[in-house]
Every structure is written in structure tokens, then in C-alpha cells.
Amino acid sequence: MRVWGAVVAAAALLLAHAVPAQAGAAEDRPVVSVVPIGAQPPSFSGVCSPGVRFDTSATITADGPGRVIYRWGRGYGGWSELVFTEAGSKTVTGQVYHYTGVGTRSLPLFVQGANEVETAVTFTLGCVDPVPAEPQIQPALDYVGRCGADVMHTISAQISSPIAQTVRYRWRGYYDRPLPGGLGDEREIVFTEPGTKTVSAPFQRMPIPQTNAGNTIGVQILSPGATRGPEVYYRTTCVSAEFTTMTRTIGNCRTGIPYKYVMSGYVESSAIGEMSYAWARYDNLEGVWTRDPWKPMSFLDDNSPGRQNVSKTWTTDAGGSGVWRLEVLGTDGTVVSQSRPYSVPCV
Image (cartoon, one colour):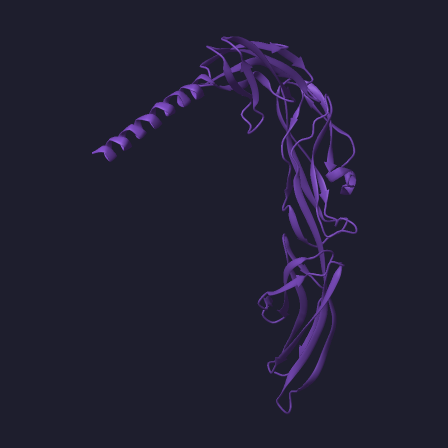
């Protein structure tokens, strides 16, 4: 019984020491409240580019001494600390920049003491800056196929304007990397009323010189303001197919020896990548093209443009005539070589 009594007494002593420690922790974090004061300027109308700064303020009140932390905005991190030596109020300030937009905006403030509270400082925004959207390239962003001055696709994007005005813009590549077909020239579009318009231009498919990479492209507003819209990544791989030789090695109708043809050619690519090729035959009697199954082909050499040789042996014991050609499967149709004729006189 004496041992049990000693254990109980020791437990009571430990509990007595724990209570003041918890009370001390609670006293270090006062109960808080917060009210917004306002923003300077309380409203803005005009060109917001390259950014309109709003200075916000609010009052934090604590019911006693202790440490309080607070944060402007909804991002992670960025906590600041206030130390109250007694009950009272302190003013805290924040900043936020806006580049586009119309209407009421707000900057939230989060405060933690013994409790958690939040408020928000509101202000009015009236940016007249036009806003460009992400462009599109038709028929494909990542293109594999024939290139040249006559291979023209279309690039388009939307521009929204909150007021009637003339907007000057241009298409802009990654770090002003040159764009094909004079896309980087200044252009303009007229808004007779607020709204959204689509701008477009012919897009010439050309590879980026001395690189296997692609480029980015987006709309850059030149006036009013100076705003860059979201950009898209595009890539152009120019391919060509060449049918170099077609040789008949054997064949005799009178003796019944089948005709054998050996065909050779090559596929050339301006950049590394994967594609497919096939041999195709046109029969003059049937009047249709028949294509072999597509075969995969990879260009993995960093020193592209590259060339890969291909060949095919074709044997037939049936008479007829027609042509063969080499094809590469492209993003927007096939790339074809010149055709070479064949003739099997057996009937």
C-alpha cells in the first residue's frame, strides 16, 4: 500500500506541473480578430500593363500579449509575425499587382493566434488592355510531312477587348526566335465595341534552322499596353521520299520464271523523330493503289537532317503493268516519291 501511494503521489505531482505549462502556451497566442481598412488606390481605370500596384491594409487586434502570424494571399509560405506586449491593435500592409481584368478584386488576409480568422481587402479594377488567348495551329502543332513555300497552314487566336479601340499586335516566338512568313510583323485589329475577335494568318511549315527542337508562338499586344498571351509549342519535321532505282533481276514468260524487281530509295528527315513508311503499287488494269503495311522508322541521330535507305524485292508471275512509289505517313496526308513504271508482258 505504501508503494501504491507513492506512485499516486508522483503522478499527482507530474500533473500539477503539466497544467501551468499548457496555460503558458495558451497565453503566448492571444485571441485575435481582424478588420480590413482598404486599398490604395481604391479603384483604377486605364491601361494596366505592365502592372498596377494596389497597397492593402488591415487592423489585427489581440486580446492580450503574445505572438501572432499572418499572411496576405492564398499562396504557400510568406508568413509574417507580430508580437503584442499587451492587448491592442496593429496595422499590417500588403501589395498586389494586376495586369488585366475588369470588376471587383480582393486580396485575402489570414491571421493565426489562439484562433484563426481571415478577411479580404477589396478594390475595383477597370483595365482597358486587350487580352490575347492561346493560339491554335491547324491542322497540327506537331507536324510531320512535306515542307515548302506552298505548304501553308493556319494559325489563329482570340483577342478580347473591354472597350472599343484599335489594337496593335504581332505574333511572337520563343525569345523572339524568327517566325516563318513574316508573322513577326506588326498587325492591327479594330474593335467597334467591347467583345472578342479572332485573328489568323497563313502559317508556312518550315523547320527551325540548326535545331531539332520546335518553337513557341503566341500573341503579343503592342498597344494599348504591352501584354503577352499564353504560348503554344509547335514543331515541324520536314520529310521527303526518294525512289532512286528499280531493277528487274530475273523473269521469263516463256519459261515460266517469275519476274523479280529490286527497288531502292531513301527517306530524309529534317529532325529527329519517329514515322512510318511503305511501298505502294498502282495496277493499270485494276486502277487502284495497293499499299504494303506501314513500317516504323526512327531518326535518332542528333546531327539531323538524316537519311535512311530502304529497299523492297517484289516477285510476280502474273502479267500486267503499273507503277511503284515510296510513301511516308505524314500528319496531314502522305508524302510520296516519284513513281517508277513496271511491265510484266506475260498474259
